[in-house]
Length: 392
Ligand SMILES: C[S@@+](CC[C@H](N)C(=O)[O-])C[C@H]1O[C@@H](n2cnc3c(N)ncnc32)[C@H](O)[C@@H]1O
Picture 1 (tube, rainbow, N blue to C red):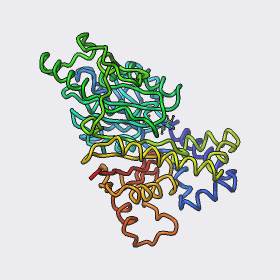
Picture 2 (picture 1 turned 90 degrees about the horizontal axis):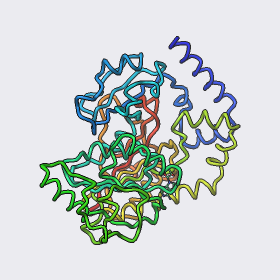
Picture 3 (picture 1 turned 180 degrees about the horizontal axis):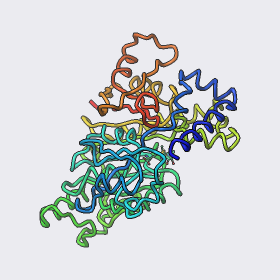
């Protein structure tokens, strides 16, 4: 039954690739992408435990195995992650999922979050936050011990609404605020004043911060209204200054999503028109790379010195990844690349050389040794490029 399902999927994808327009094949060849990345149909899938719940409520490996009706195995020491074989029961029909005990999330996305090295007092800025898979993981990692907060921004009204729903549904939003806006222009500083208050309440209540504490002065509300925030963060006075910059920034940028087989299937169903519009129109691609660069540049402005910014896309194209990183390093002399930590068993694919660059170019070598490029063949995950910058 499982094998038949996998064979059926493989046949559908083979058919898609055979009937793909020449523009797609050109895109693959220009970006040195092996089209076999789209043929892998037995990739493991992943769930992550909602660690905001009491440990007693966390599902065990056996629970997940029974509910998903497939093989499940833990990813050791990695934020409550389990891998499972595809083609079992649908995740959304599984009890642990319906009761908000687990999230579905690819491990490549989790590695982008892990690269932030989140600490309990960190103020984190997520400039493209919706629908919120990474934001929820950040919230779980931040926990409730310190005074850290998360600020999420997204330009899409319906996607930021989904993000809010997700935070509420999993009850992981008590240190998060969301803004509906353009991440290239976002300028609200980290909520340090609210954070001091969180810390004060935490000290009074033995570490248990009470996010809806009524004593926080409402009159100090800042000028940019959050789309959504718990009471404590809703009325943050938004003071500026270097102390109020962010400790971590993540730019999980809008991209062409070509690293995801599900998107390629969608394009093929829609008659490849969307694909050609999104990928092959040079102007649109230029606009997209400009957007990505502007998001990175603004994230950098909002980041403290000595702090980390992570840039990621789920595209396999060179323009949106290596070339953007190259551009960023050239335009930000205070930026240096740091190695993106990976996990044993999840190996990066080859980092590509930016067109017209010499193979021995120094910046190019930095990019090759520090960034990662996950894909279904190299890492047996979805496609994701990750770069990690440190601000001098
Ligand atoms: C790859 S998705 C982000 C996924 C998200 N980080 C997660 O883990 O669920 C890219 C997001 O960027 C948003 N976006 C596009 N242009 C933007 C802009 N100028 N400012 C902020 N967000 C933008 C899109 O609406 C989309 O939700």
